[in-house]
Every structure is written in C-alpha cells, then in structure tokens.
Length: 101
Image (cartoon, rainbow, N blue to C red; front, side):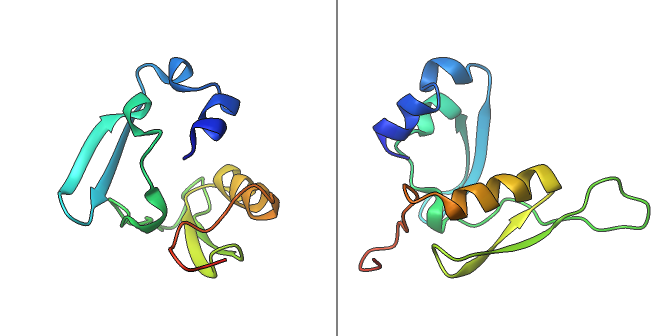
C-alpha cells in the first residue's frame, strides 16, 4: 500500500494492536503489526487459510471476480465482499503486477 493510501486510511497510528498474518513467497509464514506492513505488497502472497463452508454457518464466504487484476479474490463475509466491490470500482486501485497496466 502506498504512503498516500496509508495516510488516507488513517496511517499507522490508527492500527495499534492489529496484526497481519500472511505467507511470504520467499520467507514463508509471517505475522507482523499492521503498522509495519504499510509498504508491503500483498497482491501476490498466498492466503494463510482457506474459506470454511458448512451447513448452518452465519456468514457467506465466496469469490469475487476482481476485474482490476483479472482474478478471483476470496471473501469470508458479505461485508468483505462489499469492500471488494468498492475497491474494484475505485480508479485509485491499481494492479501490483509488473508490466500490467
């Protein structure tokens, strides 16, 4: 995430006590404070876990076709899906892959 987007989101000061766990392609599984991850590029890291699906669950996980990157992105709730929809429509969101416009 760029410094500009971090500032718009409240920046590192607004994320005290929040941690991010992800799988780095080179270093494996990592868990770091969110404030230390503003410069991290998460577009190509693997998810840490899968999406559970079982009878009677109260959330609705699924996959959203994210047109900005041309791939499906997983979500665990309709709230997350709605955020994905908003990000997909936001012109400030760009693909992180090199050579992709």
